[in-house]
Image (cartoon, rainbow, N blue to C red; front, side):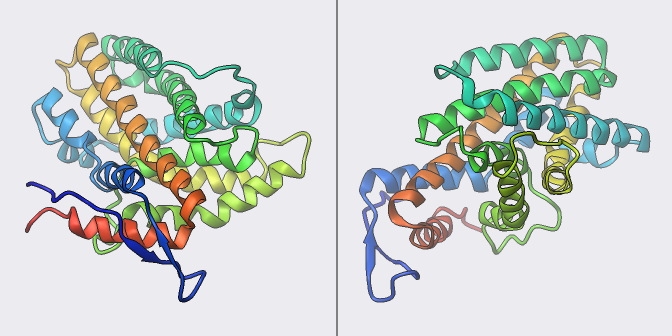
Length: 286
């Protein structure tokens, strides 16, 4: 469907009754792209094109043993990503290359595709760390301070933003619903990290945060696992799946950190109001 061209509008800021915030045209266009990226995840359709079957149907019928493999791989991958987020992200001297990150993910996906989906427990932590570093580069490009624990955790939040849950309310913004769901655990984890020079990975605040991330990330990983479990997928198919996997999360990260940047300029309430308006304007015709 065609979308009408958007123009700057006045948005009432609930934090400042009677005042309004005028969102610049270029930021509105960025917000429009963010809405499309965050509210219409395309990974299942892309994976279905690779394997030639509806990926949600395959993922929904995985045997119990496969579900255990996915769950263990997700936990291991997020724990590895958390360790990187807390120790090395803020030491990076320069922005990396998204193409390089995709190449690394493709290589790990090719190995996984060649050896079979059972290698997920080994391959996913590698892919997750590669994706986290790419996400951190995107965050930095949007003005985020990687030395701030809250920013490091916001990078990890991207893994929860990349997949819809069956319990999601279609009438509400999935993006802001997940951010709201994670807000308390993110704040507690960030405060815990900021107050300590040495952070224990098994600390309750961090465990709670990772558990909430895992509940959402696991949905997307189950789609990836289902695609790579198709017998004919092979090394090439595994590489294509992982390319789509990291590209998906890079897209989500761009939307997430663009929204956060615009919030820092205009205020959270003003941006949320405009985001919801755009979401209605861009909704596909029924």
